[in-house]
Image (cartoon, rainbow, N blue to C red; front, side, top):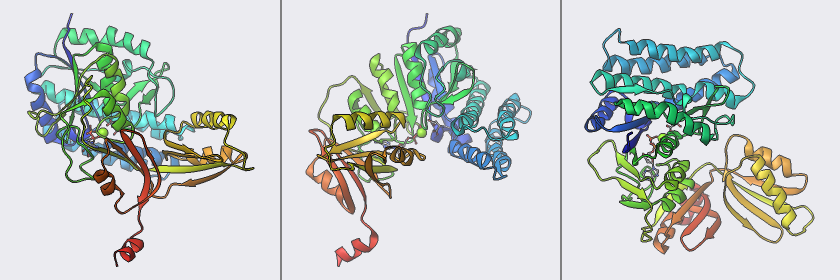
Length: 435
Ligand code: ADP
Ligand code: ASP
Ligand code: MG
């Protein structure tokens, strides 16, 4: 019976090319005799490319097969650098891609989310084949595991809800015995399966969550996600200069930051780990010896200001039509509708006769929601270039800096958190203000 199981997750950035795969193998070398589950994402930006294939097929633009050929080429280029011609991995990958061809040969399925899940996670099925084959080739014994045999979900395509009991059973029956045999167990992030064995996905960036599900069900000793940053930083380095690394973070801080858009960890990742007090390490695949960030049951409350920015926001202003108060029954009705349309509410504010909510603007959900309530309420929707900025442990200097060049539409403060829904000041106005 193995006790000390570790779970590692390697994202798209870490395996974006042949050198990336070689680097991952180098990181894994010292763990050759550990009980280790490895979860991988699709390579580089392959998921985006697969989304384009789905869209092309749905709209019948005629170039879906062409896009697929390009995508295959990108994988074959990488494989040609890692394997000798004739290596069985070429056939494995080819057979995996054939499943997309079958879908493209049929008329597009009327349920877009279903169609998406039958095509997009093939990126992970392929990348995991390549990485597993490479590890075996260099002598790191690795068993490939189909995550669809493990991660059981409902049929909420593109945002599958995990059926924990079935998943736990599958891990005990399939994954644990594989670990007991020895060698690494390598599987895919992001993908799951319904009871009828159709593919589902866990939401964009969901591979971190897959690793957390494995960690939870295996009572892992720790989970590590390997990133292109030194650890969790005080803000996204793509947006802000002068960010610093956080050495330690509580589960609570991590969940607050990721929920509001800190893209470094998928927000659903923290709960399963917190529930079993499993530490999460965020480490750099560029500098694997670096300390990274430790996330665990700390109660340290001396944090510097930390910023998360979530783009793609919509601000809805909902007012009663007859100037009556927004009373309990209105609230009850609105919340039922919000749940029905699965809107993620990031901020709310109400006055006597109106109610403002800021939500993630995904697909046409916001528009459909607004339509559905307009009989009873006056609704305005603003979604032009809106972003939600969340500052934990805010200071006057941090707030001043983040307000610069922004029009703030709504702001809300609690003791530790300041949130603002804002948009850029238009360039013309900025120029005239500077004069
Ligand atoms: P993966 O390769 O695992 O998918 P991601 O690209 O999803 O990794 O996540 C890493 C990226 O997250 C970083 O490159 C960085 O730009 C971004 N990021 C956003 N917020 C933060 C933060 N607070 N700390 C570190 N990185 C962040
Ligand atoms: N490949 C998927 C995505 O890009 C899942 C992940 O990488 O976490 O969203
Ligand atoms: Mg990612």
